[in-house]
Length: 140
Image (cartoon, rainbow, N blue to C red; front, top):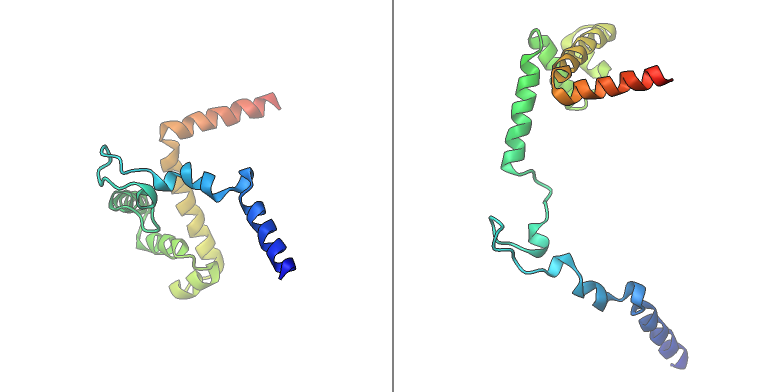
């Protein structure tokens, strides 16, 4: 009994030391804050954290971006390859589904990548990144 009592006492001292004291952590915890009246939903604490499901705004933005990128592709075969790759299919699976060789699938995938890179090259931040890369290459 004495051994068990000492082990329990040591465990309590261990868990309540300043660096891991649960009472101190709970006081400063972001999870216990009161709801903020300026938030749309008025929730605070754990409920205010992002969940596993995307927000409707984020889902709509992703859908619009995907649709815009798919419209850049030349035809439906390219769109089908892009969608299959986004669904994490392998090159062999895509080639089998489209009844073509793996090399044909790879060439078409290269066209897709180039089309999407050209699209992103028109965005201002991409041009700035290209300029920075060019400056770094000149320094070397």
